[in-house]
Image (cartoon, helix red, strand yellow):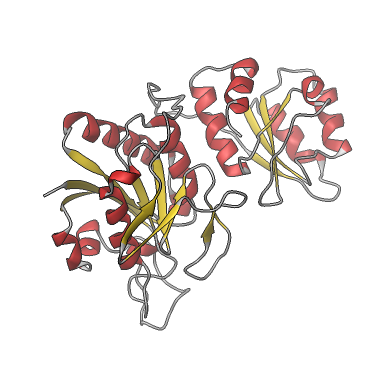
Length: 327
């Protein structure tokens, strides 16, 4: 039979509440990966699945150390076992999209890496985790999934790591890919996914992740943002910063004045937007203020890209090339 590796990190899919009617008041990251596998006996007919527990936390508490462990373990597993069909990761939904995007930028292997989560705890009536896990395994075993990079499977939909995001706090259909839509879907008739076309760029395939990561804050655009936060970030000596700008990634006049008046070294800075979809394009002020547009990346994914760029030692020109290569 085909072999898969399941890496468990916790989240709602492993969460438990006091009774089956409770959907919101529960503890994430209670069950281990072995319990998740045991809850879906149909998996035994699909593949031989080994599991490892990387963490067991609410994904809001995921750390850089967890990311480092995930990247290292997946790289090792794929290199050591050439017959391994792929990797499935169970993950909390709060930061699932960020982990998927990080892995997309760092894993250079055609075999599928699939993330799944749940919007309802494992103890809930009609818990969605078991079906998501089953369908995630189906996708990881599908030849059509090869070459797509990192995928997210939720509510029967197959999403790419760059476009997928969590858009709702409740409901099993909380994930979507604004502007592009899902890559395909999976149901009891199989995996419906077009074969990948061509090779994909993996800019940080050889990057070694350090124990100490740079700090990259995200500033949120709003009416009359107080300059205190931006000034504090600059004085603290941060090396990277992401703006969640209004509209198409626009900074306020006050924020621009702070950047104009800053006499020290400017951090690498990306402009994303708070709208939820749509690209951020370059503008005439970017060069003067030291900014770069984040393209279609939402703020949290722009931060992931910026973190890796800083670890890799890229300057503004190198980051600009990296951003321009992605729509």
